[in-house]
Amino acid sequence: MNCYVHVTFPAAIGQDNAIWHNQLHVLEFADGQFISSPLVSLDIVAHEFAHGVCQFTSNLTYGTAESGALNEGFSDIWGATVEAWTDPNKQRWLIGEETWQVPPFFLRSMSNPNAGWLQSSPDTYNGNFWASSSDPHFRSGVLNYWYFLLSDGGSGTNDLGNNFNVDGIGINNAARIAYRTEQLLNSGADYAMARTMSIQAATELFGNCSNELVQVTNAWYAVGVGSVYVNQTYDIYPTFGQDCSQITLGNASIPAGTSITWFTDNGLLVNGNSSPYTSQANPVVITSPSGSSGNISASAGAGCSIEPFTFCPCSSWDASITWIYSTPMTGEPLIAEVSPAFPDAQAYRWYVNGELIETTYGTFLQTYNWPCVFDGEGLYVIAESSCGITTPIYGGNYSPICSGRMASNVNLYPNPASSQVTIILEDLRITDSKDKMSTTQITLKEITQIRVIDRLGVVRKVIRPGKGNKKTTINVWDLPPDIYYLDLSDDTQHVRKPLIIRR
Image (cartoon, rainbow, N blue to C red; front, top):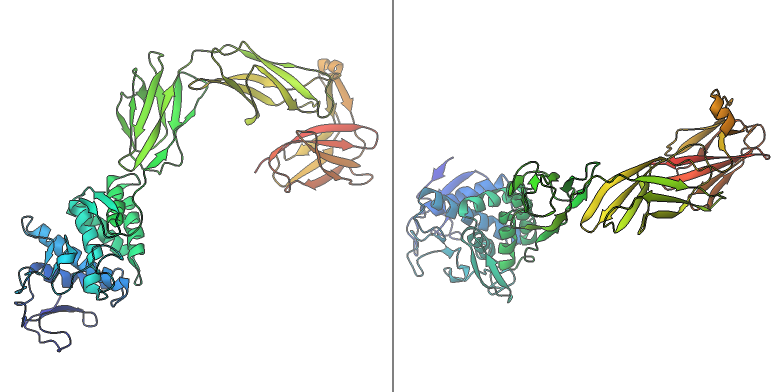
């Protein structure tokens, strides 16, 4: 870098000045004339260098717009930061105090912008002195005061009447956030964008729930830009496996990489470790070696809180599910029972093929509607106790019996389907003698009508392929994912086949 001293500036600039030359990319320093000695103090030199940094990062447009105030503010920020790095005992928050020769013997104050030389700078956006401070050197006071509060902290009431409190994070961490913010801004940025980008910078550098993020946000609130930080609250959700002596806790909405510290009582372990335990990712597995219930809480930093959870481990539940068959007609419910009941169960969740079909408050399922079909479906129940969900009980396949089991020459593929399903009539072969005795054979000769019926017995669509069809493809893309059945006819016989639509 080329730096020029003893420079004589035009009268419009004056000799009590120093500049970064945008076109020549050099620094120029005058000797001072009326109110200052040569403008080569450390903070002023760093200030001018910082204009060059700004040109090659955000390139904030200079002038009366807010981008000009941000340009000047970032230069003051780096002037103070360089002074603090060079000599921690030096006065960092006054700009030009070593060169200014007239009261108050400094050019600007970052800790009290209202007290600057010549013209008081605003410390609050749209607050006192804002209207009279179009010069970017003075409107920069808002950014200056934000940086001071972020570094050293402070509390009070701003010009808008808002009470604020900021806990300082130290100038080193504040500088990291400020520099990343300057990289993220564009040339036309205003104070609102500076707030947004600094919050993004704090999140990138320190995390979504970090104290640094909280203080960045609250410092902007203190200077009248945006609202105070609002604590983020997350629930933790349980997932039980076959082994109900352990539980998996997590929440997919907690940002990845968030540091979570878990606390438990009664000897509960987190990922096999005693409390407190810190993890960088969720979920975690909670176990109880003693089989005792316990409370679980977690902390995700100053900016986030997590709702506590109570874990009640369970012992083995030796139960079974029995289907109680009637003679079902279309739309008629079938009844299933789980026995014995789980101790202290408040509700039972019933699943077929992994889909929740109903929650009951007793051991009977009485509202599940389905036709008589050959194909079985996987059924299981999960009982809910007062403090969570317990172990699942599996009931095997659901194959309701009407007048013997039914076999047919109808095949569907793919099943599950997403957009189309093909129906084909094939030769029916039953080789097992037991099956021959217990199975009713239905052989369709052709496909003349197809009705798509939902689980409630409502006909969703009717297709008539016409005479002579033994293979046809139908569209199901317009039906929502669910379980349906196809009622197929050749004008003399009917066959019902289950169809699952998934996407």
